[in-house]
Length: 327
Image 1 (tube, rainbow, N blue to C red):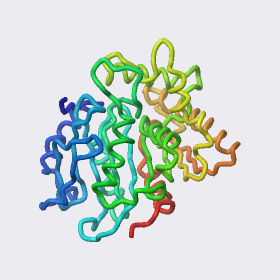
Image 2 (cartoon, one colour):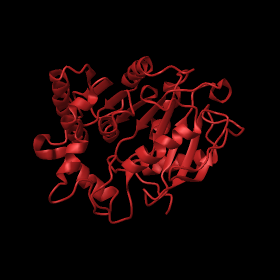
Image 3 (cartoon, rainbow, N blue to C red):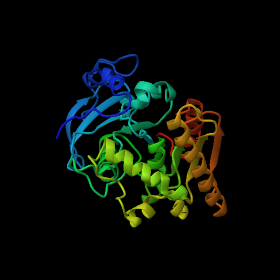
Image 4 (cartoon, one colour):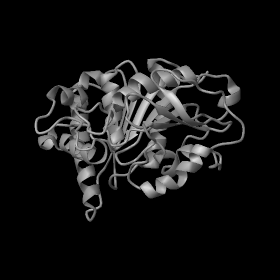
């Protein structure tokens, strides 16, 4: 087991890595003084931590689900340490080639959530597509197990949350937007609100382009040549179980928020391919939701494959309107 830095923008991410772990990044993120210490449990053993009297708490775990030690940032609401209240939780999932630090280091999540009465949990997921893969040649990479069977109950056991359907939302960007849609459908009783910011919603369209991309990207970055869904033949049951388009009834009675870009950079093939597929898939998904009479909020915005802060703020307002209020 080892602590493995990975991801796009690796050099920039590593600049802040040691500082975050050591608690030396301040600017409102951390403050002197220890928070109540979290404990081990649910298959997770804490191997590194920065618990403090500020908002941003950091943990790294040893777990049999993952062959290295994944991290998580837990962003507490203002006043958490003294209020005695319980709070709703947002699980915020990063995109491919990113990691658990992305939202606070590059997306200003601390300021975007200032004054908001909810806990934000930002876990590692590597480029594992929020899945337990068909195969891995570098040890276990069971991200779904880590997130849903281990981390979620660990959060409820160690923080003052509402451990219930109306106490949890899940949102994500890109691959994380897919993960949010997937987890919401597969674990129906866990999340009352789901948000996909430029996340794919249809795995089988265009001859399974998203499935192929998940296989290729996970093989290259995360699984040492293994794949999420299998090659040359897919594990069809897994694809069906994970595909939002094939789980439409599982979105009943949930708040749903979707965002996609309409004008990716034509010079940037990665931006164009990603957001063109995202937009088409979200339109297909929206059509299926509408056909089933399932309410949903959607936005198409100028630009490409980016996390839009104005859309996240709008989304956050809607989440807090749906979630149980802190009390």
